[in-house]
Length: 126
Image (cartoon, rainbow, N blue to C red):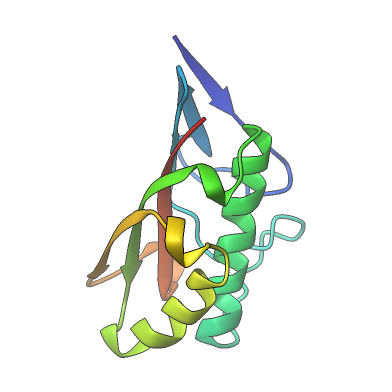
């Protein structure tokens, strides 16, 4: 049975999807972009600030499911420019313990919603 996860501490969905879906002990998150959940304005002054907003949004979704980044087993990072990888990775890495970090792939894409530079989705298990 699936349970829809929603929190007002992360951006509301801007389409026909949910922030996350919990099935049993597994949480599947939708991709998060750098929308400020209070204003629904983009936070894109620089790639580090943008990535931090994405991770804070993801943190709020995880918390709504009573999870933390320690529960994350897989992430996918979509970026517009692979030249931003190191700076994104530094911010992303600050949210995980390197010894228990999840599996991950990072993919450069031709476009992302609202013209953002980074989007991240996660799978977590209780």
